[in-house]
Length: 197
Image (tube, rainbow, N blue to C red; front, side, top):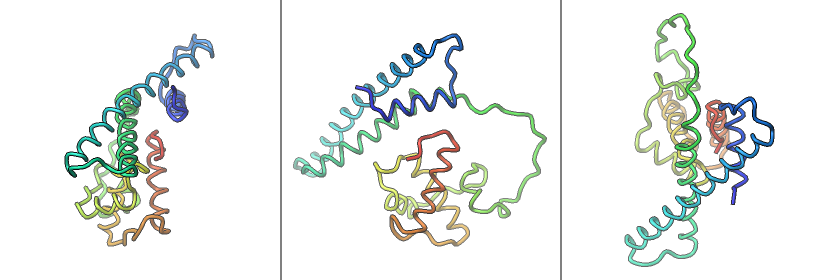
């Protein structure tokens, strides 16, 4: 059974980043997209079942008892989110070709201190890895599975850049600053052609 979300992601990735043969009819194109979405949905379901079973077994081993209903649902949801991320990354996102390198005149080196935090966190050469406290805060503000691993990685760079400028972090999920920063990360995901979640 094809997941509507996976079908939407497949259609979006192919329309924006990948090309199908120009001589295909609309029916052939749709058939290919449907088949791809069905295959990915099946792989995600199989991996989610495997990861979920493993997570429940591990929890049982760690605690010496079966998890209760809500805990089990949480473990299975987390496994499903991980499975989706793994399969889409390996089977779909890796097909996206890297951006074309265009010949540009060499840019003068910019002093890192002159780059504002709003740009530092998105640029590899300027960003700082978050420390453990920042990573713990990211996990608290943007928990899995509601937010993807890629989202949390980007959010970690964002909070690290703000900390360098001695700007306060959000205090709790849903406060105005957390909402504002969430939108910044969503926009950066969209700019990278990734699902905003």
